[in-house]
Image (tube, rainbow, N blue to C red; front, side, top):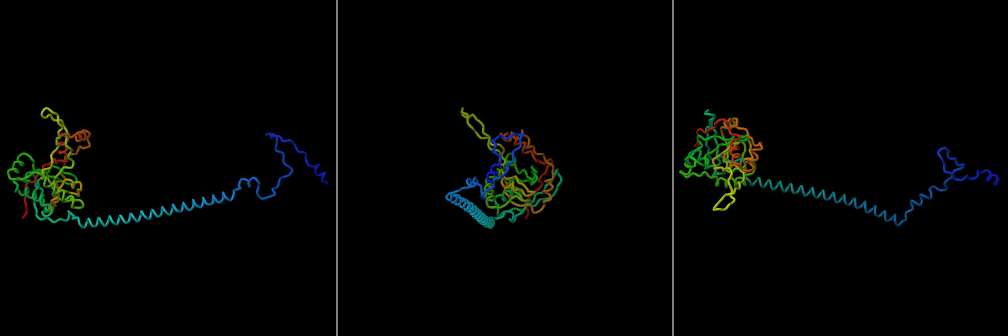
Length: 335
């Protein structure tokens, strides 16, 4: 029986490379695996205990390290939050202490009153009554009240408003030359703004918040837009020397402004001496007068202003100047 079985098996055929035309010959029997895993897989997955222990410890260290990083990040965020809250609390405490110790310049009480009667193109439009802070800014109030009353030999009578801006109107004050200057010298008056600048510096440092609010009255003591001195060569004693030429003139301490709206941009140039107590409608009437339009966007004006050309300074003085003649017809101190 065994011999017949062997004889019945087909004889082995030589190995031939299969071609596209011939189909593969099916095997008469299939190999059955004797175990669940193949030998090749066992060779590929064979890992020693030492390597397994090393890999396991490395994974454990990586896991613990990532957890430690997350914990450290959370702690750092908590510390930053606590520090921020503490700094905010300290800052609020400092602001409260500063507000408690720093006076508010908008809550001062007037000690005396002056009046200004105004006309536009010869037509009277009303009276402006101003309350002055004599206790807080004595130098500025003394200067302004003397000019209003005429005690200094000169006065605001017949003098014009020269600039109308969206937030304020400005009076031209007195001239530092000509008849006004001669009369001021003859009566011992002073048209310099040096003493007013010192008082403005003290007010600027001690008062908190905006000083030039709607209805406030202030004296112009400095010009922050004034260009720096222009350098030029001058021949002196046969030698060329570099000299500085001042472009424009500093305010003489007689120009004043009346704010129609809150104007914090004026805090750097104006000493607030009082506020309008009556006649704010007259001020609004002045602010509605048509003015010369600005031309500061012109490239020619920008270049001239940059190099300190005097023509640019003169042209800038004409900007926002009213077409109508706005004059103080009468002024004085109220009893």
